[in-house]
Image 1 (tube, rainbow, N blue to C red):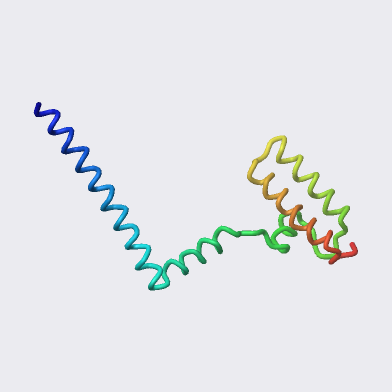
Image 2: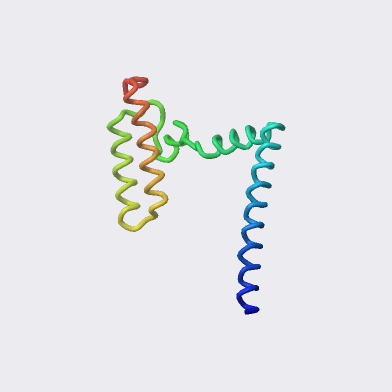
Amino acid sequence: MASKILANLIVMGSGIMARALVQAYRQALQNASKSGVAQDTLQNVVRKGSKAMTEQEARQILGVNEQSSWEEIAQKYDNLFERNAKNGSFYLQSKVHRAKECLETTYQAGEYAG
């Protein structure tokens, strides 16, 4: 009998706590939106989430410059990608691939005649 009462108290207490937490969260969201904190936080998350590789960084990774032809870039990419596939790091291989993708969009846009 006592265990049944104790179980009921635990269930009722946890239900009350859950409702209180939801209500507190809603109130915190309202307060944040009134003060503009929510908008600032959202903008910071978007900025941190979009860490696109710059063209300069891509060129440094592949070891090429602005005057390099697309064939030279492709050759450097193949060389670095294969080296890291055999006995290297997946992280470096990924960076090499991202660098090629970055420069590929630049060259496809027709910015460089090569």
